[in-house]
Image 1 (tube, rainbow, N blue to C red):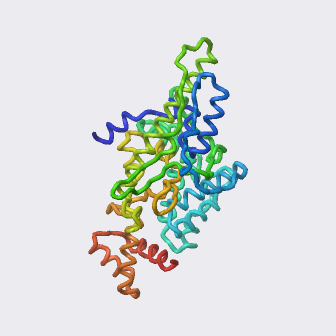
Image 2: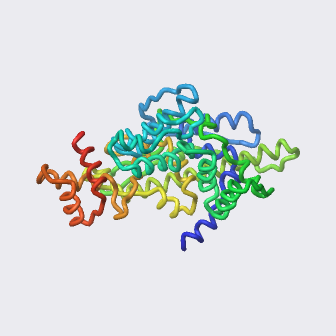
Image 3: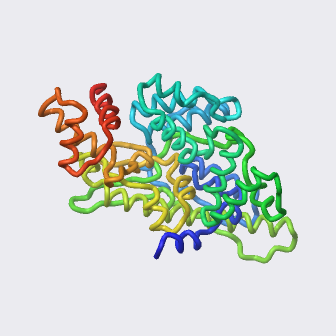
Amino acid sequence: MQLKQVLKTKTNLAVLLGPQLKLLSKSIGALLEELEKEEKENSYVIHFSGKRLRSFFYEKLPLAEPPARQQLWESILNQLRVELDEFEFEIAQAILENLDDRGFFVGSEEEIAKRFNVHRDVVEDIREFIMTELEPVGIASKDHQEFILVQIKEMYPERPELLERIVEYFKTGKMYEDLKKFLQNLRLIPFDYVDVIYSGGSVDIVIERDQEDWLIFLADDFVEFSVDDRAPNTEEEKEKRNRALRIREILQMRRRILRKSAELLVERQKEFLLGKGPLRALNLGELAQELNVSLSTVSRVVSNKYVKTPVGVYPLRFFFQRRTKDGLSKEEILHAMKEILAEGKSLSDAKICEFLRERGINIARRTVCKYRRMLERG
């Protein structure tokens, strides 16, 4: 199936599932609290249970629960630590230092580039990564126009024509009625977001090795949530029943995406899980395409989730390594560079580029310089 056909079949979850969509990004502990609350308030929830959760889903992962703004910053920084290397993380921090109180980037990319002795494009790439890949989406946008366009891309990937119409609106100021309904679902500023929870306490996935077999356990598999099928008599009852049905659908979606994430992780990162090699390239887009859901949906599900493996406990996002144009992960490139430098530490960056090309790895000399600096730092 071609990508365009896949995009056409994707459901607009933000519209169909409404506020309950936030359940996708919650850890299992936070999810159980929400479901328990829903059971008390909604008479259409006839059965909820998370008590069958086995003890090995619990790990000591204490994280403080500060006020909302501080909690938001902690979430952003934790996401960056998982996604970026040490040098990139420092640049990302410099970008975050140049945000105003609304979450817009008001600094100079050129000044940050000079500070870290890198090309301006490196800073711009990291700013775009913060803006498009982190939750909440849109942080570090330069202005309202960029912020709105980023949200449109994330929420309506199957409607590319919306981008053209939004750009036209910014140019002409002419607003059409059908466009208003899309804009009404958008946030006005990047930091207009307080429901961010990045807390620990329990793991969402356990992966174990049993001789030659891999065993996968999901905490979500032990969550039961049943909805009463009686017909509602009032508008209030109708809304409660619809809310319960939406929650049930979200739980099924969570389970499906987490299961496929774990299976893909075992398939692609087997050497790392055995303690025998670096992480390989694994893109969230691959997972989204296999499941036929949007990238933003997959991103929500893998956020704030922990995986217990034979080699330790890691955030689920840790295993999704961005790939280079050659299809390799950063870890694989660093591993190759480490082997080359072990043979001759006095090699120039240009010479390292040549040796990497002989191994089928084509990266720019400035990238080699950046990775070399990371290796020298330890």
